[in-house]
Image (cartoon, rainbow, N blue to C red):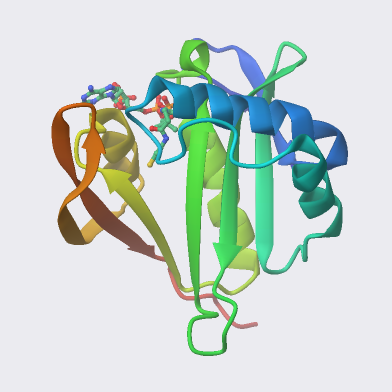
Length: 180
Ligand SMILES: CC(C)(COP(=O)(O)OP(=O)(O)OC[C@H]1O[C@@H](n2cnc3c(N)ncnc32)[C@H](O)[C@@H]1OP(=O)(O)O)[C@@H](O)C(=O)NCCC(=O)NCCS
């Protein structure tokens, strides 16, 4: 996948499938966002660059998608979507995403998610799920705008400093594929 998109300020960015050479930047982005402490569960790098590179170069492209957003020659964000691994849940996929702080609020997240939706649609996924902290208003605003609805929540599931927040479970049902 390789798409050229325009952000809110009419700046161009690319959304493309990640490859082994993106491993260091992806680990760095997730460590950076994790260290902010309020958006995602990991607290620092949760994987070595070597491990990430192996995953990227050996993933099954029909069940596992890793996208990156690239602007002005550097990676500013990433999204990972994984399809259910059993027959019982292969119609579902889960994803997580993160942008470096300076890239936020320009709808690059929306571009990444639209690209992931395209992949999911082409693979016949029927339902996409995610989990988000109840305090993450920006992310929830994006997901709602993209059609996701809350399906449930685990109360006080995460502690962000002194504050307990809920884990909100959201989902979007893809439109049925037209048969030819
Ligand atoms: C969540 C994230 C991926 C969204 O990507 P993005 O490109 O910033 O999102 P968008 O610009 O498409 O949309 C964000 C929306 O939230 C709104 N928003 C931002 N902060 C907000 C807040 N505190 N309260 C309400 N809305 C907020 C923005 O105004 C925007 O809506 P608009 O375009 O209608 O104005 C990105 O901000 C990010 O990486 N955040 C840190 C990591 C994270 O939260 N990951 C998701 C974990 S579930």
